[in-house]
Structures are given as structure tokens and as C-alpha cells.
Length: 291
Image (cartoon, rainbow, N blue to C red; front, top):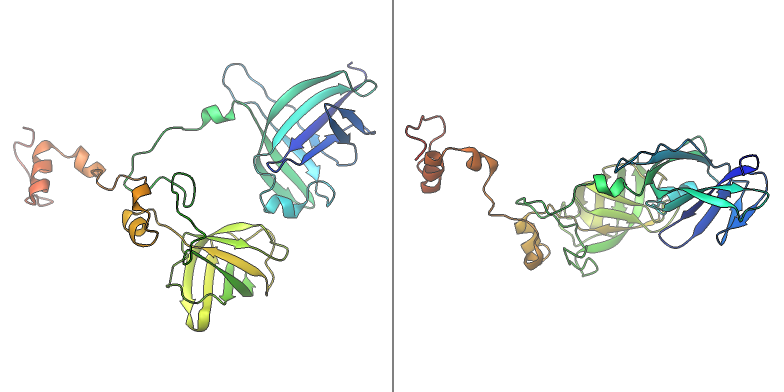
């Protein structure tokens, strides 16, 4: 198999789309996938280790409308896509061996090409799991743990883009919302080249006549066009007050607002008692601190 060996890759997106690529000069078919030779996709050597060490490599390819486009990458359609790599005998594709299986990690693009980090199946084992005990909420707004219905009136609204200046947007037709209502929220572009891209909101200022000035944390990869629609989703600072007053969702609050601060936990017992009684004054030495 070595003399006739070629490499092949299949990528499966979260929406079920499957694409096949090969570094051979002719199409190959096996495992129910057709592998195309015209993609220009290549991969570096796979670094594999024993035990729970992470397998990793990079894939490099050309951006094209027929395969992997820049718009799809910026829209997040390839985030976390599953990738398999085979070694295959091009003279007899039934003779193939799976050498890597994992997911796409960070994807960067430049000069009409993309580079994708490939992460092996052991990658999730290096991620922290479990619940974090913190005064603020640990849920993501609108997810299963949060339970807030973001389609409810008052929590989102559609606007028109008047002008774009880098990461700053001037919007119209978005009256009825308080100043800074969408800070820490999300702007989802519904039309134009940036359709499908979601960006987090850094600043939000209301202006007279339903006008809005919005600053995003990062500039969209594809420039929004004036006149396109954008859906603005309310933001949350993960505090109990905002959860109760803005979203009426305090029953699902996933934080611990009465958790003592670290300074309180680190203080000697005498100081903790005086703090609780309102008698402790910072800077004043306390004797017999430990009881």
C-alpha cells in the first residue's frame, strides 16, 4: 500500500454537510464519501502521543465558493466540524486506514487560503469540567440552564444599518429600548455579505428618533452593508439584580450571590466576627484575632 498511498480527508459540519478532499490527482470514493482532488487541501504531520496527551496537526487549504468559503468560515458554519483523515491505496480505495479523527479548532485565513487547527478526540479531556461557585451567574443567556426566552418582546429587536465604521454601527428603527440595553448582548446580521455572523456588543448608546450607536468587541470578518438588517439581542451582566428585573428569570439564576468574598474567607476569625457586626474598621489592628 505504501507505493500507491494517498491521503484523504472528510469534514462533516454540524448541519450534516460532508465534504471529501484528497491529495491524489484523481477523485476517490470510499466510506460513502467522494473525495475531490481539486481543493488544494493539505495537512502537516500528525503529532500523536500515548496516554491522554492531545493529538494535533494543521490543515491548510484554498478558499473557494465550491468547497470552503470565507463567508461560511466567518459565519461559524465550520466551527467544531468533525474531521477524519485516511491513508488510502489510490489503486484500490477499498484498502484504506483511518489515521486521525477529531474536530476543527481555531481557523485563520489570509491571502485566499485558510489554516485550521485539528484537535484529536482527547482534547476535551484537557478542558475543565464541573460547576464554578461564583456570585455571578454561570449560565449563558438563553441556553438550557438559563431558560430565558429571547424571542419575548422587549428582549430583542431588528434594526437597519445606517453606516459602518470598523466595529461601530449606526442603526435606525430601534426605538423603545433603554440606553445600554444591548451591552454584553449579541448583534446578529440578517442580510448582506455578513449574513449569519454574530458579534458581541461592547457599547450601546440610544439616540433620539430610534437611532442607535453600537460598538462591537471585534470587527466582523465580512463588512456589513448599509441598509442590511441586524437583530439586536439584550445583554446580561450575570448579576442577580439584572436577572430578576430585566429578564424576570431569577428562579433560573445559576450564581451564588450570598457567597462570602475571598477577603472575608482569608480574614482571621475576630475580623470576620467584627465585619459581621459592623464594628471592623480597616487599618485598625485587631488583637486576639484567632478565637
